[in-house]
Length: 386
Image (cartoon, rainbow, N blue to C red; front, side):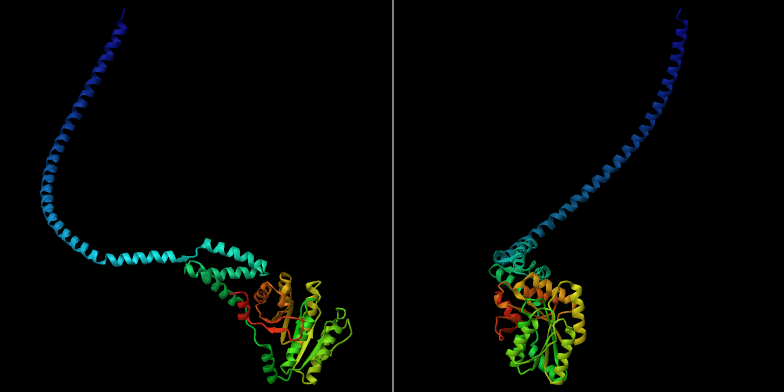
């Protein structure tokens, strides 16, 4: 009844037995191998134990040596402590001085500078200083002030002096034009020719009359060229000044070639040994192209020794833009600013000076012929309170 199952079990048991025996033999072999390995480890442990014992003996001897050295070090330390006591008082004084220095001194950081300059920038903009000039001033001041250690009591003065130094770098001091003309005339038979230009209404004609008066006072003869042949009554206006000053004026009819008028004035000066030719020009600025054509021609014909831009000091940004335009078109050798006596800001002077890279020659300071002042850089900076 269970024969088949019995055989199956018997076969399985037989196989299992053989498998267990095989595993047992394998395990016995493994144990034997581990026993040999253990034996080797024991031998190694004995050897290591012996080495440790020897090392301990060595350390013990070294320890005795170190104890002696430690005592020597202790003695040296005591000597050093005594020496430190002697220099302790001077060190404390130095530390106190350092603290006092920090208390009374200040170093301007990047954030400090930006805060300081932002306030200055607003003031400069409000006073007609061009952005190009402000950027230049910022660069100059940053170099002079950033990370510089300044006594707190001298902080305001240091900033003021830095601003003054920056302005001195930007503003140019003009030559004495009268002296220059006299030197020129000693060496040349040709008259000294000055071309005046600027937009209508800035006082250009009156400025020419003022300069003519200055020349006469310095024993320099003049002739006027009425080369503004476009603006109504411009010839008559210049003629009034010529009559008052008692000098010759060369004129043509309205609408005639302005270059021809200037040419005739130069010819008259050559024939009559006149020192200076003062050339008035039209002040139209409808388009830059018209201005360029007119100015290029009159400059080419007259070959002036000096090209002078005239503007109002109180015109602010308008005067600055005019200076840029004329400088691009004809090139400015120097400027004269009218109505400087009523200019409360001063930024136009700085800006035109910087933008044209040429000096302010004179300042108009009133309505009289004598009201023309040679520009003085140091005096101007002093008037700014620096």
